[in-house]
Image 1 (cartoon, rainbow, N blue to C red):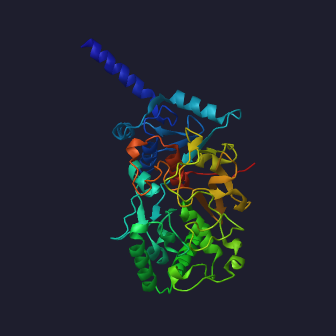
Image 2 (cartoon, rainbow, N blue to C red; image 1 turned 30 degrees about the vertical axis):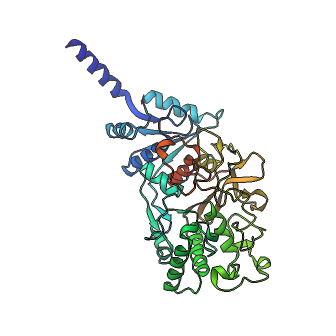
Length: 413
């Protein structure tokens, strides 16, 4: 009896000083992806959350509560109960000018929208963002062209563009088994919304999304959703589609009419002919999805104390990441405008995989490839993230998901 009383008193003594929960994000973490969902959950409960940039892989620090500890256990997340003095020691270490670390306070949870088709004919269950949001248990709403044109974006802070074709060329029929049905659905919707062509509808949607970003929104695009978004903006008022996609031929001098001042990331690119599965020379990836990836890409290091945003977006326990393919796998470095910040590139130094920029009051990130854990030749299959809880490629997506919650100071060297 005395022994149990001693243990109870000892436990109570420890808890009386255990004011914080540290969620390590280095190799000691059992489930990196679920940890982001915990941070979202805590913010939704109005709990204090600090993101410790470059400290043990970008760890999270929470005020201790039994509810938070229970959530860690239920979600299978590694955590450490630390005393007030230990938490202060960590913060003092991070504050030292001798280390490349920083503390970012996390505020209100972002209202998340995913731009994706949703109907009986198109079941897009391979989109990486949808997969990881579901796995991390972060809520979101799916919206598409009709909702965006009806000003639905005013209700959201963060928008993801999946592997979409904003040029109105039906993805160049990449999803062959559903291509005819999908194109018919798009054409019907365009007509219902008063557009004569799908390309005209997609351009109108792209303009609304660009305005959303300029007004303070956070835009995250992957794969062809990034490439074709800029192509559509540059081709405003120019027919670039072959007759098989819109019923008439392209403008013979369409290339010379492109307006690169309207794009976010790319300029001086050359359009590929309509029979190609590639849209332009922005995309440096190969088009055979059964081929093995080229290798790895590397994340750049930034000053966590001065270049806070790119440092935040690159938080990871790995900085060399296995390449993954997509319809748009990587971006041609020589076609990127001066303003964007390059976050990660392939070993050859010419193919950019990950970049960030600002537009007006907002922010955008482009990320090449379809699925960070996708298997070549099986890209139509949904990845089971239970098999990849430590995926560094998926962590980059979740960095962007939490990005709007960070209370940032715009500082640059």
